[in-house]
Length: 159
Image (cartoon, rainbow, N blue to C red; front, side, top):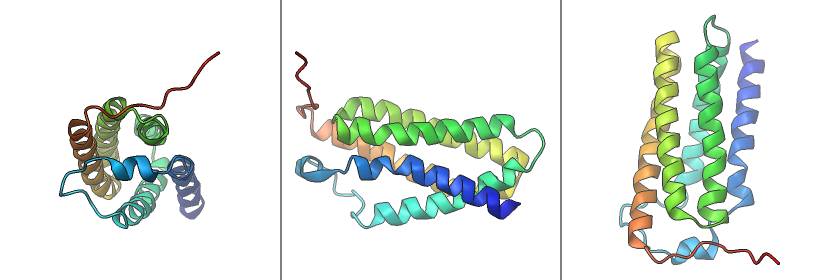
């Protein structure tokens, strides 16, 4: 049963992460000023793959426990915010709004980590790399926003 749950959670994580494929960073992001400490490009898929595997296993462990409703709702919230960040930040290029979303994402990841920890410390610990990565992403988003105050969002012409 845990293997099936793990695969379901993993599929959900990859579905959420698919927005990265739909809205790639592209030349616009490459042209932006970024802090010296920006992780190298190869680190992003490695980090996300690792995080998705870890939190999927954590989710599978929690799903089997009585009283896991709030923890699983928080898991769904962080997944939704994760899905939203990329289209806002790279699709419509709204770096400031992206920062607001990534801060909400960070808070929901931390809340999920705590909720999981209270039910199963192993599952909570499996969320710690995600808390770290969301912290880095939040700081990076803020730094890029500050370094590029005149960055223009995508504007559509409505007739």
